[in-house]
Length: 127
Length: 132
Image (cartoon, rainbow over all chains, first blue to last red; front, side, top):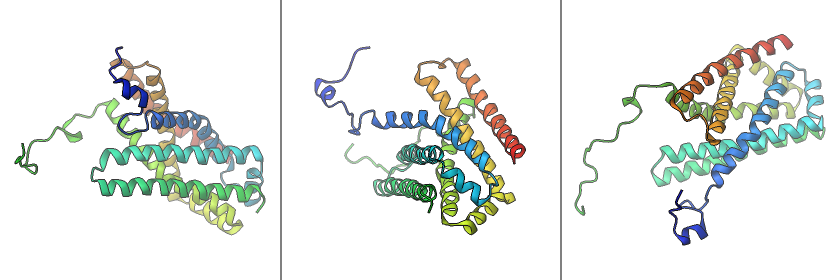
């Protein structure tokens, strides 16, 4: 295929949004990780359903389980932040509202991620 | 064009309601809807973990919420959204590799997505009830 880009465009290589393929790459990277992480999460939830408090805490104090759960939270929240960003960019065309929603998206994803991480760490450190 | 009436009631390009729904299109829309639903569904995950971190009483409260009929219904929907979005994602990986673009393949994969997502969701819940 003939490369239609100008030499300057090739040097910069980032396109009009100035982030090149990084959004796509991160989206797919987190998607591949999530296939395994979410499978683990579903199995964990099924295993822990109806568990009493003591056995739930005991499970989350297993370092492998808490590490994987932290990955579920962080990778999952990054993936959903990227996805919701695309939805907002697709449907909201007024600059002000779009900017507001794009910020809200980052705030929401960050809050869910951090609150869940703190909860898992508190449990796994025995708090 | 300087004095063009930008607010004129000109015909627009057709949108969703014009087209007859076809399976690949419906799966594409469902992929986005399930993605958005899972986005807000993470509130449930955060609620679950925070309640557990807060102590036995609040953990029991979360268990009661999720164990109620409405709670189970929401979790069943959550499970399907998760499974459907994942299988839809696997379909995207196949396309990323440059396969599955023929009309027959795309239609077949779209049908397989909905059948597999519903079947897997039911199987997961049966397993859930068996191990409970």
